[in-house]
Image (cartoon, rainbow, N blue to C red; front, side, top):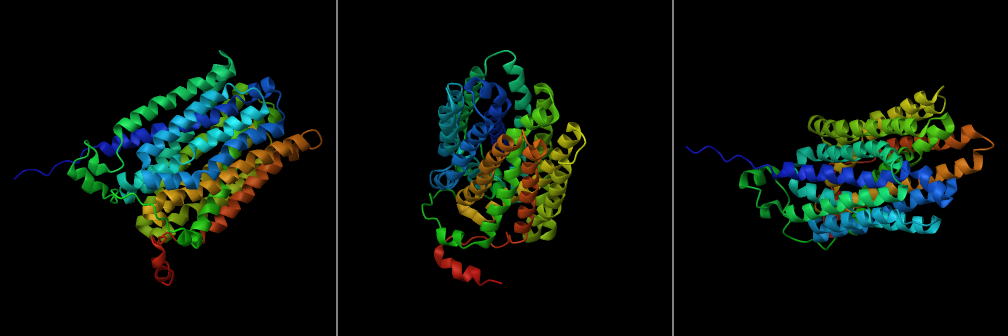
Amino acid sequence: MQPPERPTQARSILLGFVLSLTAIAYLDRVCISAAKPAIKTALQLTDSQMGYVFSAFTFAYALFEIPSGWLADRFGPRLMITRIVVAWSLLTALTGAASGFLSLFLIRMLFGAGEAGMFPGLARAFAHWVPARSHAAVFGGSITAALISGAATQRAVVWLLERMEWRLTFPLFGGVGILWAAAWYTWFRDDPAKHPGVNPAELKLLGSLDSGEKRASVPWKNMVSSKSLWALCTVYFGIIYGWYFYLTWMPDYLQRAHGFSPQRAANFSALPLLSMAAAVCAGGYLSDALCLRLGRRLGRRATGLVSLPLAALCAVLATRAGSGEQAAGLLAAAAGLASLSVASAWAATLDLGGRNAGVVSGAMNMFGNLGGALSPVVVGHCVQALAQTNPWAAWHLPILSTAAGYLLSLGCWLAIDTSQPIPESESDFPKAANKN
């Protein structure tokens, strides 16, 4: 009797591509934060102008998430992710050519529009290449790689700025993405069944959706009518609002509110990102395990219901910390606790969206990044308006607003039911809505 065929490991190679992609994405996003003091001085920008520069990327990224998610569903992640990575890499390189506020603002806005759709594209790929029982864990791993890269970028940029002008660092980072895009387009296939490295045993293990059809019809009415989707979008808005304080203003906060040197600020600014990385990874595995034990409805909610109130508490305590080190530690704890439910949120887009996972994840990420766009502007205006008259309020009012965002997300998790997917056709909606 012939032994059963062993599954090939193409899915492991895919995971390597995904982890490296998200790492490169955050390398290119975070490098401007670490280079902010040099850019601000060279281009003679104010704090509020830098806030708008940070938000330009995030706002454009948010606006283009749903269209880019639809394109990923329509044309497949192989083509769309290639287009996305090439676009953002070229615009990263172009950042070094900015001559003032307007040019830098426009470059960052185009950068955001170009990068939009990366995570929805990955969601579409995961729907076909990753077994359902591992969705949250894989999302957790991919976001973890992004955050570790963001933490390393802080120190790398400070090190590079000691050796070269800030303008030269951006083309260096942009070139990495171009190499990745060429390798991705060569290796990846939208349908695992058409990949030469996938044998029937692995295909059976994947249990993927049939990706042969290109779906042009999206049940927009069902999506707009879905309370779970609206609640999920608001959950992500609150979490990512806080996230972007750590990605954009954390080094400045430690230098200006607590007197840290640039290198020391870079080191301590990495703490929230590393905490978020560990929490997202752990939260992914925990979410999948809880779904198996408690069912999908309660299992997806559980991490957020426990972690978000604790995150809000840590953020409030950070505003009363006796030293910069204590404040950084409490903010790292807040960031990590809030991030425990991030992988659950991404897995919920697959639970709710099914074949339309690209659009559903695009909607959630759009709302999240609208929160991310608002955060740097709030910080920039508070600092510019209050730094001279009330330094405590200048930095700590924005931190308190992140605590409020976490509590908003907590309330919205209660309204999400991932055991009831959004119907895939408009005619199915009344029947699905009356199921109880």
